[in-house]
Image (cartoon, rainbow, N blue to C red; front, side):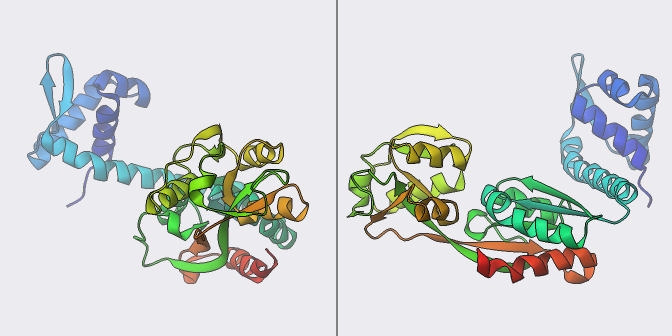
Length: 302
């Protein structure tokens, strides 16, 4: 049985917009033509997709059930169109990398630079998302390589994917060098009384801090300043206000220059593996495999 994809597309757009009128405007197809094709589709398969409630069209229970796989179908269609467009716009290839903030800010730039020296005509697209979204983009073939913190994703529905450990990322409590707790060992209970500077709610690092407080049965810190970027956090701490909890990859250069100091918090040692994730090597272009080789060859220099 061959499914009428055009009729499915009409159903999908009517469901999205909530009316035949809006779907007609979006698709530039007449309202009668849309209505007729959807009715024909319903008749062909002996199903009912919409019902009228007043002046509105609403999905039937079966229509609601059909909407999700139909959405996946047309998302996949869009991805195929993008692949074809990329093929024509980038005849030498295009490498799409997704990663969390830490990866795209501190790891990928060096690797991308080395890669471009070898493949100057291959386009490189780097997208910053959270760790779970990076994995999802890879699984949906919206990216070719994903780099993220392995403990920050909620599931590994990815047995068919390949994971390569890049480095271990530790987390440090940091303060300005002249802060009273700089280079000292104290308890978490004492430290949370200080004003904290952190990323926005939902960030992986902030979640880790709150989890530590919960495990140790310590009051949650008061977040006095909140930024969407880690550089802003570092600069605020360097300026002398409050403390923060950040990745050692981020903090190390500032600590080495004496602009930041570590606060040694008793019984708090947290680390996270940064992983590079990809599809099977046989499904990848040679230049994609080369990027992975560049990343793994240079992980010891981080």
